[in-house]
Length: 389
Ligand code: PMP
Image (cartoon, rainbow, N blue to C red; front, side, top):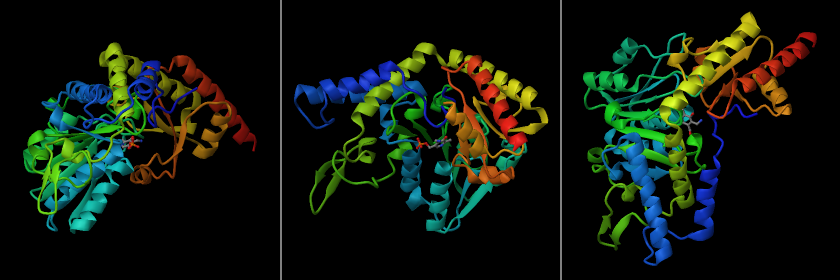
């Protein structure tokens, strides 16, 4: 029983078939070959770029950079911005960030001598808009926050936050980590108005090793490439090098072609179900899980994050009195119930709540109320074992 979709989602058959078909029937490199097989691969690869642009409301395919995942996307954005950050500047993130949207900015601030500010979160695991506004000033170069927390499940009002940040300092560049939003709700970059948006294919039913960095075209145009090699250059010689147009100048080397093509199938899978249905189903299931866990374990359980299900995605991190999360996850694992235990790559967040670790279940459209009941039965057994011990 799989309750770890925030780590990576299970893959539908159509996604597996798309990758297999590429590998079996038209495996070749993209953007270079002039023979039909390579043309097919290139067409299919570029068709996914178009599909992604439509999927997230981007104005142009030029704004879609393929990467290996959210981590690579955020590091790429941080690399592109390295020259723009100066010692008097500050970089702002939030206390709920995954390490992937925390460490690249912390390191960038350190490298540039800029200051690094972490916006505190509330006891319910939300970002207070007044606190957010107080953290932005005329020296804020970059503000980075997640659309959905991978621990608390908190859904941040991205559009509102971006508008608030830009309202104080229109020059602040905003990056949204949409890793936990992309599989569950519509990303609309035309509404969000963030400068960068990062997400991973594998959390949205696609393969691992493929992700996206969306960047506003006018902004991307201002950056030279930072990774060099094949595929990103028109002409290279000792005197002069002419780099290709965006997004290709940021995609040096052979990309994960089969992965990108299979990600296209994953987007079709999501579109066929529809985000309205996905969100409605997952919200109802999350509410059910919250209610059942709370009423079953009462004072013994501590669920962190927003109480109101409409403010959270299908992620529930909790601690059970006197039982270490690793013991819970291991004993559940023995029954083939897959949950996570630990800090979930969010150490500052756990520190904020005075917890060294939590157990996390994360839901997707293939989960059911029956799964929640099985989990609760297993947790009750574990509680019994530890009350005797
Ligand atoms: N940000 C968030 C909010 C995440 O949940 C994750 C994955 N757990 C990442 C970034 C990193 O994603 P990836 O490992 O696919 O690069």
